[in-house]
Image (cartoon, rainbow, N blue to C red; front, top):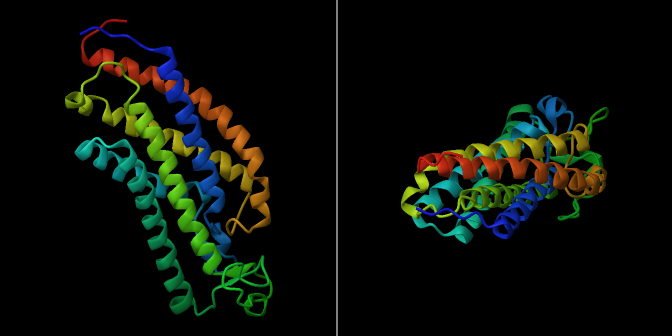
Length: 250
């Protein structure tokens, strides 16, 4: 089999990978994360770290995307369902957290960073306990998390599809040779961008209406640069996997 690596084609895939990384960074800023304070019901959001929650959603989306692509080979369907998979995972996580907050701890869902819910316009400040930054995951934060999960799932799936299509001349019947590599590298890039967003947030965040969301442009620039560099290495790895599959010495 003849191999020809088209630089323009690979550059296009690199741009798509970079876009996927930026989408992941944006998504992390939209997910309500409260960390340890939320675990003690002293802040809004899910009681875990930014990176862990984002990566969990990303892994779910990637598993859905990989399954869909193996079964259908439809890249667009892979992106959409990957985003939906991540959104569902986050929805379940936030719902279970709210059930624990309401019926386990006995606290109302209230934001400490907005006097009224940006979506429902319900009063928030009168329900926030003194010394805390809110409780649970109120409506605006919940919907922001769903949207963030969807965006992040699309970003991770976009990286996965771009990496999967990077080898030149590999027939669809042999995709099983490189799918594991594409999944592993996609997960790695997901973690990279989740950590970038986590450092930019610097603690807890409620979602798109949080003041920390205004710091997003800085994270987008850093994310684009880092993903671009990592994307080059990932593409080289994927091409090498294909050549190794066919026994081509480089």
